Length: 74
Length: 538
Image 1 (cartoon, helix red, strand yellow):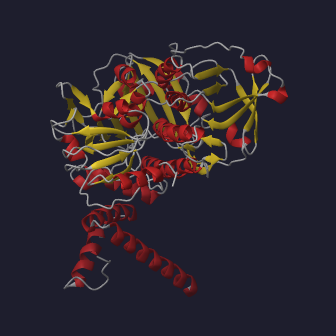
Image 2 (cartoon, helix red, strand yellow; image 1 turned 90 degrees about the vertical axis):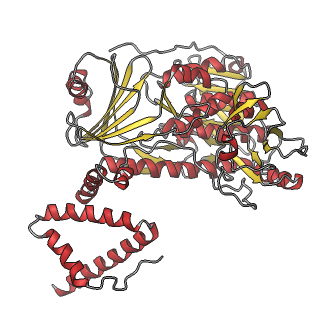
Image 3 (spheres, one colour; image 1 turned 60 degrees about the vertical axis):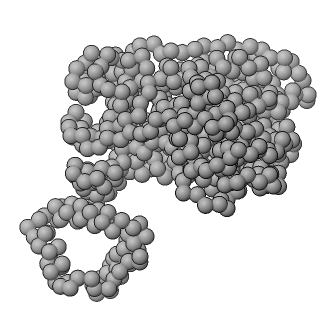
């Protein structure tokens, strides 16, 4: 099964808020640790190395786009 | 510090040294380096009927325990060489490992969860014992000419031979060889002599090894700690060896002062904190950094590299000595066939293909273990920490902890294998090593499939699960038959399960015990084609 980028939540805002609120009140260091745990838990739940590989590729591509547009803006 | 078990050997002048330089003695095989790999290869070749000259620049077995973990696969090879039983009797047998974080146990594994194997998953045995037993075996074999204090000073490659200049206490002499096998270790001088480079990744973390002698209550298990109370922020390993000796491995910081750290008075308090007492003596202390690297090619025409000279890995996972022994096991039968004209030289290329892929696998696995123990970036350290936390109460977390994945034999993707044409739901596929299984003889005695393999001989072997019909076997192969009406009975059913066998199922095993091909029904033409392919004759 390929990585799905269709909208899978009936209420996407709930999902986004859930993650945001989990980070509320945390230091950057604690947030980074929480993200590390979340990534591992969710990766294991997906349990498909190709989907995970695709997710990493997509994430890194946006990281590159973000840093290049950021450079242009400043 | 206690005296090591060191076996000293005398240099003896050889008649080859009397010959004029322009008329050097010629030998089919010269092996350079009498460590575990060179000694084992020499024995294997001698048992296959080849004469071997084995040279070593020292005159004694190395000091310090060095390699201590020998795998089931290595023990099965050594069993074929006639030294397996002695190694197991002296060694400490273990199969359970535990991983701790702080003072809490996170995970426990058993490397040999099933019965019915002649050899244990692992033994721990000081390398000097292994070498001493191998030297004893060498001395029983007149086909091996072992020359101590013979150091290769120069090597010249020719089309049909290799010329060696050997330095001895009596001065230099010349030797000529059809093949030279370089088993001369991580600092191989032969590697430079053929102009080969040796590239890879250097790890900055330093590790301290201390072998201590004590009588202790710890069980015979491999214990690994992340961030233990006695060594905050780093990792530690405790492992038992024979003679009440314990291997302790402590990770140090990259900037630790090696000279300071290795002094017994500075090591002692660390170990005392770990053990909770200081009733121990040091046998050996060493500090090391390591690299993961390999040669681009293991075969340089008539000079072939095996063991640490060809590849180096981190020590976590017991992949150093064991992979060197797998090299020797892989090379021995191929070289013997080429030397006696049964196979073309092309067979030796398969040694490079199979063993360099295995080296890549070992480097990948041991690099992962090392990175897990010594995370490179801050986020890598956070991910490692998350795994350790998740491991307390999740199964997936436990399985993600990497405190050294222990050596298992590679499955070769190799031109020697005949791809499966039939349907299989288990069993070793072509390129995999043969699993052992318990059997009974017709007289009712217990035996093992690996014993039957040794008894069958030193060539290709057909393993057949009988179906009542007489087997039509090519002359060049030996046969092992398993079945109610044969000499070997699979009373427990383990062989049937491990080989996914039905009546008529047949495996073609290479002389090193790897599967070359397998068939649901034996056809002489198919076996002959697989045999030709596996011996590079086709």
